[in-house]
Image (tube, rainbow, N blue to C red; front, side):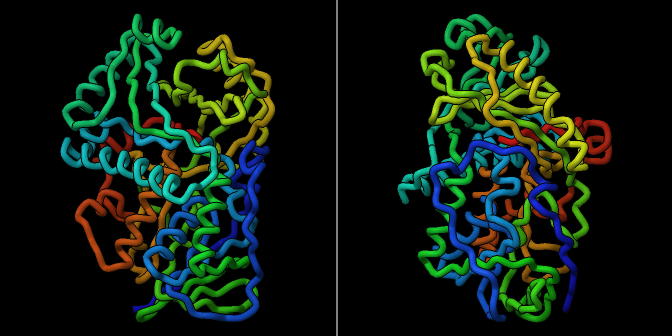
Length: 430
């Protein structure tokens, strides 16, 4: 069986605008232009956080890997991430239970938690300097109805064996000085600098022999036991497998029916007085639409974002940056009056999400030996780690039934849920 498809180009300006604060102290990996055709075990297309995690994991498994990017790696969607490494998913456990039943939903949440724990261990074991800090999360109610929903969500999480406690308004206000009707307070998440993490992972892969190739893959031809990736210079990379890790879009592929594209906006403040931060520097996010999310940084800034909508045109998205930044500042000030809301960095990005809040990871249908990882929504780095683990297992010949929970051609929620329950995109850059 043979199959071909062309990979249309998209550049970083289409994905991201503005300038985030990440990567200032890092050393960027050195990429080399392709000068001849070659063969490799795995060609990974895309040098952001997903490609970096895949390359690191596959080289650790003993595969020879070429990591290919036609632009400066990490400066697409990865640079726009706010790197809130949460195990809590865009879809609540309550929503996933409604979609897929309790056991499947609970298993998905547990695997998300295991992904954050696994990434944390990887960073610690290799002494990766990336501003990594374990963090608790505060999932805030927007109003009384939201508080009731969160109380029910916490009860369901308890049944699933997930950690956390529900805080009613008096406890939330006393302990955190946050004037909301309720919140779920949960351990097990983290924060990091996404560019420093990406570059460190790439360097780990390089030390094991990975090739960093500066080229644009224009065509893939899958036939027999290999895939040929043709570059814009006419060179051919013959690989046993190809992994597409190109961000929110998988150019040349028919996107799964569950996939959606939307945009999000974020800012980083000037440095704050550390004494004015909220307790524990917890990761904060809301159950409102559109919601606000906030975290702190190692140099004492507040990173905040949200205001997501279904804008997909890059120029239209960029025109909204001043107004969206102002809206985020105002929400931040209302939630945390102690904040100095002066903006040092502001940016926006276009991202992919799915109707059920779960990523799309695994074999590309009807295209042998080609794998894809995208549709992460607000859990980009968490699901990137999960993608690396899953694809590594698949290439090693292992299969688990739960892989189907994230398959590109999986059956999503029923037609009523798909069309009536799907809310306006709110993926966040976290």
